[in-house]
Image (cartoon, rainbow, N blue to C red; front, side, top):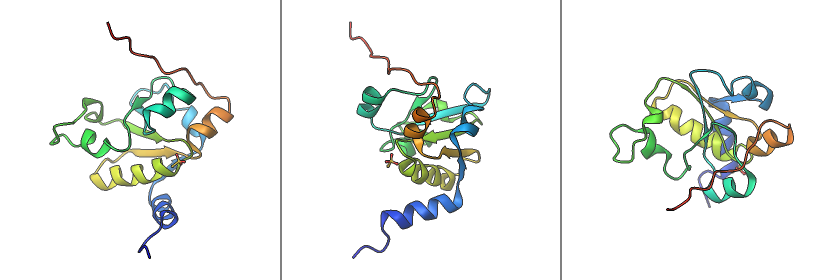
Length: 134
Ligand SMILES: O=S(=O)([O-])[S-]
């Protein structure tokens, strides 16, 4: 028997994090000082598309990419931006937003319903660029 199931974890995260509707997030898409963060798996990006300008930080690595003391640190996280996370449907991003908040990021939020809701609302989507190996 688990001490906590996924539902409890997600509900606890929802209670402690900021959640933007798609409409609210859309107003922030091109805003200076705001960075969208896509925490989905790369295969989902290839299959479903991406939000223009979003930085891909897979959930599996994100704690290591955010922490400047980690050998995997990514400079995109060093600025004092607002980070808006999303996944496919809003559960992984809720857990990840809670984790980044626990790590000390002050302006972090996620998008309700994730990329699925974003796409369904007709918000901007583009194909993932395929990197050519030369
Ligand atoms: O992306 S997810 O909300 O289905 S975990």
